[in-house]
Length: 496
Ligand code: ATP
Ligand code: MG
Image (cartoon, rainbow, N blue to C red; front, side, top):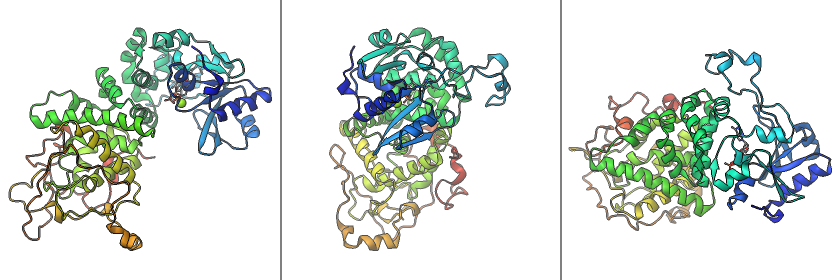
């Protein structure tokens, strides 16, 4: 296993050289060394050095010190960032930490949870404080040698994810590492070493001790890296999904009792596989909001079909259907709101068979590219199987609403000024244009019978059989928060 100097990002190499000229130790570390040795393209190149954050600031004008838990330097080269961290030792829990448990249930000496992580150390200590042996390798650009203080090379050769040191201790120190093990196993197609796996299972419940923002960040990183489907299979198989999002886990585990339930499940896995194809094809990481929208779409797919007349105010439906999962995943308020808009916008981007269908101009909206990408992902997923393709839900019995008369939801409306500004361009197709209807079954336009009233939302529409725990709850036809604007506090999502 060999890494050649030319495989190293030139800006990362420049950072290492500058540090070495200033008599500091410096190496490339972590994910980039692992990925190069596995023959994969590194996502980014990180540097570890003996220089302290203040010394880094003096040495690099294009540098910003970030992080509270973990102070490190971002060195900018245009848009590119070379993350440069000072060698650190694994912090032992300080005595004053006891009783300071994040959950307020100080568990004395049994509690190894790391809360401060800024103890400087030397290169060997820095390698040993890292999570897995495959992530503890250093690369010396002068000698072109991999430096292995943690027996990472044998594990890479055997394609094993193994903690550095005792997995019992390492997972108790930082239970987020349990999710990280899943990420590396899924993304790099590795096996989790048996004792590491046993301790993951033993400590998985402790993920709840970690800061919510770290848990949700690591969860979304799992799904953004081109192995979303495999990651989800592992999360489900290991029972980790029960810890992260119990409602979603239950919905995915339940044996479908009808055709709609079976299609919903098949769509879920097909969409995740298509997210991965999109990530790999575009070489562009999907946003958290897009990934969230994809997870939420399967039970909503048919209701959001442009020709569906069943739910003329689909914003409410999305809100209600997604609420528990969004809460459990601790998605940020911003991403939750964006995900809702992305879902809502797909109703106007999927091809409709109705020539009178309103098509709002969404091009200048923040969610537009994401919504377009979701439509692309879904079209890709459904193109191989007419069974999976979205089909419109008819209006409930006695209902007269048609999709053509539906009022555009407030938050998808384009302001008058923006509309005027675009003027005649309005008639041109959106760029890039939504995917064609290839592979989708022909749909029939709902009939139009005079001016149609906007129906009060009825979540109990018989044709919609969403994931039961997602949509079963609503009792009132017109929830109190209707009309109070986007999501509001109802999402109960994490405040940023
Ligand atoms: P990716 O390709 O997803 O960026 P990565 O291995 O580079 O993978 P990062 O989260 O960028 O992962 O972290 C960089 C390095 O920092 C890791 O390779 C690992 O050595 C170390 N590290 C990150 N998180 C932890 C943690 N929770 N505990 C110990 N070491 C960690
Ligand atoms: Mg990284």
